[in-house]
Length: 98
Image 1 (cartoon, helix red, strand yellow):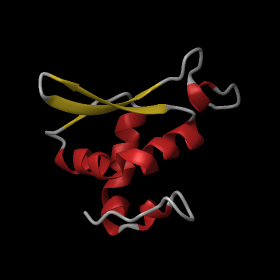
Image 2: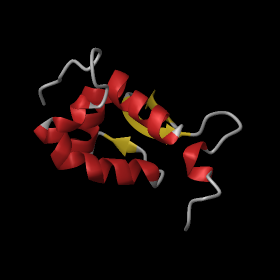
Image 3: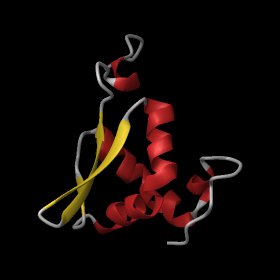
């Protein structure tokens, strides 16, 4: 994957990358459903590895008020979404329908 520098200009310009367009929708759904993305989920994991900081961390913080986290246990790295302290992010909005 070719990483685009998004530190200047549009912070969401990474979404125009062909690889991101191909795999991001599935990754987004999996993360929002609470899945931990591990190395065996190759394309999603590579996308997260490539665009974790600052692009995807900023994306989830600004659009969902959620924290995209990266953790390593026993030499296995994984990514997941976490709620800020005392909040369920924008997923807790009373005007959302289930």
